[in-house]
Image (tube, rainbow, N blue to C red; front, side, top):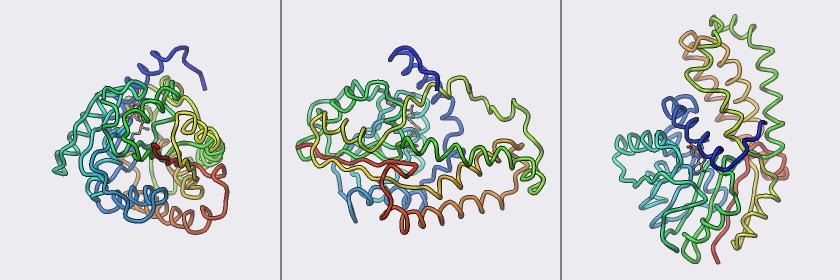
Length: 301
Ligand SMILES: C[S@@+](CC[C@H](N)C(=O)[O-])C[C@H]1O[C@@H](n2cnc3c(N)ncnc32)[C@H](O)[C@@H]1O
């Protein structure tokens, strides 16, 4: 991973990369705001906060992207009012379009997680999904999360890559590349040219936006050092992620329009099934570090 030299450079690269990614983010990552998406997001939050969490009168999402967490949690009445932040104006534009389509009122503010333009103690919940690993100044960001939460307020982050998760993903990616020619023949898809694979994305930036992966202890330390209490970290998804990375890798090698719809249905259903297996069989027994994703919760004293 090529490390950019300075904090402003990491922020700028994240903005540029995610502005472009916003154009097809929801379809690329299967972001859903229907029953499936709502159940997915609620399921993750319940793993940390227990059944029927909230309702939280006012929440702040960090790196909200196109609204996956906040918009689904609003639909589930876990969140009543929300402010969504992101360094990428393009992402927030996509979020506003999604919110409008769903009939939800959300305030959006372009902002870096480490310099939040909000008053002290002004939120009941600070949350984020797949964002901490992009942040160059984690200590400052956690200090900001504590500052803007009211006493007793809840901190919740999900979808952070674990150190082992990076290694776990490397295996199905390698297998996917090896199996891709055979897979394309099986689904009758032509091989994508490099241009088609790029889909307009600047891949030179890809290695620079993911600044780090975490151990459970690192996440605990960050929250504890900032002054949070009741810090808990758990892991999720192993089989589901390996399956997902394999599929995404083979898919990326083909002309997208050639891939039959049936394949995507199979890939989606398989992912959901393995996710249930992970939750029921593996997550209660394996240590957090053994999973692909880490989840963190804590509370402001
Ligand atoms: C992997 S995406 C996740 C988006 C969304 N949370 C989701 O789960 O779909 C990471 C998001 O974090 C945002 N981001 C990156 N660096 C950030 C920073 N320093 N402060 C706030 N947001 C940031 C990106 O622009 C992007 O929208």
